[in-house]
Length: 192
Image (tube, rainbow, N blue to C red; front, top):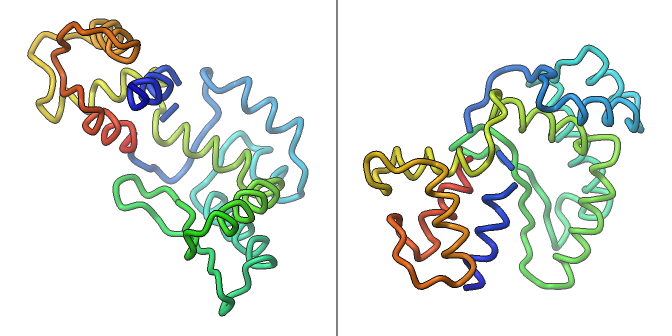
């Protein structure tokens, strides 16, 4: 049931393709306003001031983040930090060369600190708007993935999915018309 609870949390919240720019849209207007108000660097203010985050600005944000991280994890050192572009959606992900708990904790601390003034607003807005320009709920995007993969029956709706998934996540014994091992839902959640 732990997987179900985690998946339910994912479904009730977040955001696949990657155009060259992200523009301020109604469903993210509050986030744009907050980003403009709380931007802490000249880079952020410049990237956000025109209401558009370009791919170049998104790339620059991640390069600045990586430069900050390399102060703690220098190139050629025993623990490496890098960024790479995910094949499925063209967005960045962070890579730590160590799996030790101590290094992971240090990475998490620095990751959050280095995101201030670099990726915290720019990457969030770019990711959200290029991944989901219509502002669809996260559950609708996961359902769409399951449907396109042929994992839900014909005629099954996103509302039915939400009801069935919530019941499944809460430990219900009722049958659900989608694979309930969690793997397929997690796979789709990772794609969106």
